[in-house]
Length: 187
Ligand SMILES: C[S@@+](CC[C@H](N)C(=O)[O-])C[C@H]1O[C@@H](n2cnc3c(N)ncnc32)[C@H](O)[C@@H]1O
Image (cartoon, rainbow, N blue to C red):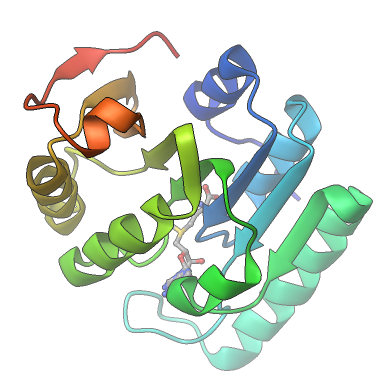
């Protein structure tokens, strides 16, 4: 099993000393595994339906096997890991409130990303972070959705490199701030 995650995300979580979070879209569990192995995150929800969908040309049996492999992989972390085999929005009610971060890397369509951002933002505490993968790359729907979301809510967006962006939830951002920045945030 490959255990390589994305260093930008790992470094960001470590630097901010984040403790409780969620990854939406898990696949092989590489990122969840890296987070649990390399950071002091105390509780990580990992959400993926492991179900057939058009973007992945696999049959359901392969997703079933994949789920078993990932469940076994993450079981080494005991109660720190909570693997939820369900779709992103269905998982919302199974996840605690006031998370330090949510890493969104599930369905990359515009509609799905907008829905993920809107719903998961409510699960992040003030002072917490939404992290989104594949911004500014080939997944145009992701970029469009993130831009629309930050514009609508007048939020600040930070680039941590490798097509990963962070949205910081602060009282000012969610209500009266009136600016949108794409500044570089040291990962
Ligand atoms: C790009 S991969 C995730 C890669 C993973 N984050 C990593 O870094 O290794 C996308 C995953 O999103 C999952 N996915 C698709 N639709 C989803 C949904 N509605 N809710 C949650 N996950 C979804 C797919 O099953 C797939 O495993």
